Length: 172
Image (cartoon, rainbow, N blue to C red; front, side, top):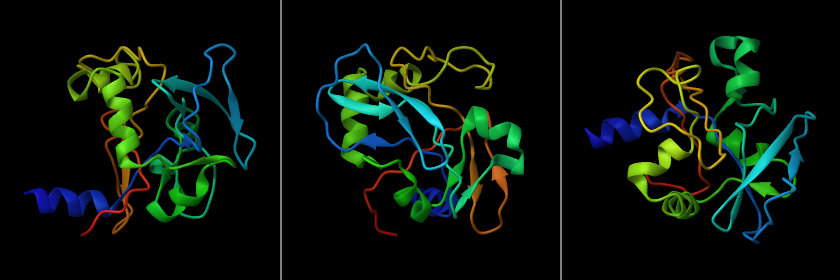
């Protein structure tokens, strides 16, 4: 079962958020913004000692897709990326986080049992019912952009899942 899930995840295209290159402590106000290659502007959020983009990436690059090819989805959910595209899509001075950095962020928010809810919006405007624990206390604004299966191009999970790439390579 684990191999099937891992294989499915490897074959899928995920949304992601970038992490700032340095883990320097950034004072809260004023909030930093970052602009991507297409001119999209993103707010940032500091969680623990790490600075993250607070919106799913929208930059249009080779290897990126919009859920169901509907431009209405890109402004809310961002774009979906292959891993190769994700590795080069971050704005200048930003990069994909490592798996360990995601773990550190989760620990800063109280651990795996509660961190997910603190990273996603409350209510069911974007997340399907029941959206248990969703309160976005972190300001991360993780959105359920779903994913695109790279083998057949089928989209799944809008409103249900938010997947994020890391720079950490894993074996097949």
